[in-house]
Length: 182
Ligand SMILES: CC(C)(COP(=O)(O)OP(=O)(O)OC[C@H]1O[C@@H](n2cnc3c(N)ncnc32)[C@H](O)[C@@H]1OP(=O)(O)O)[C@@H](O)C(=O)NCCC(=O)NCCS
Image (cartoon, rainbow, N blue to C red):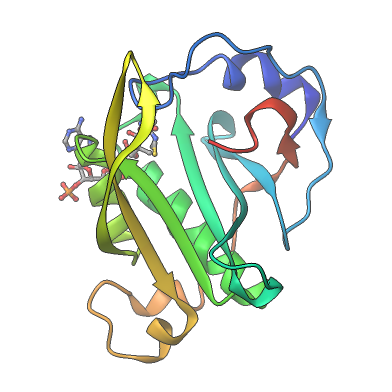
């Protein structure tokens, strides 16, 4: 991420990403495909949002790590297929260029747009994580979504053929320091 992108993109919030006031990032952090980072999503050459990724562990050993992804678009660019494409391409990039076995995402049970976008990007809903996210004065339930490298080899209904081959078109940006863990 370029430092110049930070003011407009990091100020963006939505119902499901609003965790109260935070210090705005002032400097783009180093990016590492293997662990964490963020891309600016562009439409027509303009920055319209970010997709990000960071490690999540399900056990004490390194092999129990997976990559969790997140996305945030500017309000005026939602509902045009961009969120689906951006997440699909990030998943593609991670499977093509890292050894990650599992890519996952989490979203509020009421966030229908993100649930549909994830499903169209090839992730499957795996279960509900009750009371997992404290936001807006209460604990909220979320759904966990995931896709495994081995899903790509199966006739997984959610995974389109181009998921395996589509290249990443998003401009490289690096991680946003204060928003690296959406
Ligand atoms: C969630 C988000 C990334 C989805 O990306 P998007 O580009 O807006 O979504 P898409 O245009 O790719 O649409 C995906 C699906 O959601 C549906 N959808 C889009 N907006 C919707 C809405 N407000 N309500 C219900 N469904 C909606 C679309 O119809 C489409 O489904 P379909 O193919 O069955 O018709 C985007 O809306 C966003 O940035 N929201 C705010 C941040 C956020 O919620 N991030 C995820 C937090 S975990």
